[in-house]
Length: 110
Image (cartoon, rainbow, N blue to C red; front, side, top):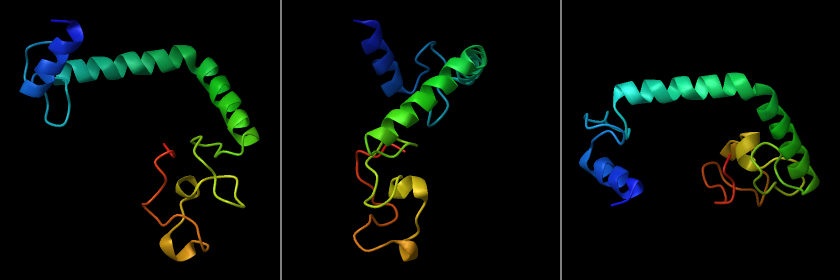
């Protein structure tokens, strides 16, 4: 059994994917491993902050040139630079033909 299969089996049982402790409901890890993962993420961001921000700016510029939403990279609505989700339209403010609030295209990850 591969490591990936073993982790999946533990996930289905409700155990932490890294140890044998019971996972916290709604998570795949125990409290210790959740905290450890948060700390690792925080330290990674702290070390690579400049690179991450530069990459985000580069992606935004590329998305804008392609006619996509610069925030999430999804398709922008006609006549706007951003998609409906990132603009944050409410139903009463929607122009005719735009996406209704809560029903965004699947290609919009933001």
